[in-house]
Amino acid sequence: MPPALAQELNTKFAVRNIALADAPVARSRHAAVDRTLSIMFGGDTEILERVRPHLACMGTDITHCGGPGTGQVVKILNNMLLFDTCLTIAETLVIGERVGVDPQLLVDTLSKGSADSFALRTHAGRAMLNNNYPTEAFSVHYALKDLTYALEIADETGVEARAGKLVREFFNRAIEAGLGDQYHPVVKKLVEGNS
Image (tube, rainbow, N blue to C red; front, top):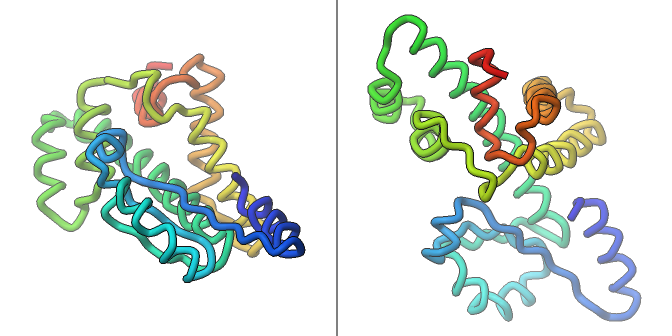
């Protein structure tokens, strides 16, 4: 749900004494199965405390982000940062491969240093190293939707978001190349020049 819609609905519901909250999630499909999702809650504190036991059935990290709609904002910004990071990882892997560095060694070594990240360990390790971009995972189409929301927020706040705009170009190119239904780290194929 776009953050502006959450805020609009909150205003309309408040007139009828109906409280609105949003609680989007982050992490992976594995985290969903393991019930270790990160949950970003936007809404009143008393509502959070009422629903916390239910949220705790799905996730281990529940963060109160502020009023209604702020959970969505944090989730969307989380995704923009993830997409930016994945594109940089793809570039890093391709550069390393082209100068003769083993990609697995590169990921293993980078994950032991200051470049370590969830994206490096998960998206590079499970997808990019194996050229495994299943259609059941978070696709380029869905990623572009969230990125578009993030870039709208950037425009509204006067931030140019150059990295996000570059990722949007890659996502659009991936869709044009017929890769839109595949797992979003498939942008590595574009970096390699294979699409």
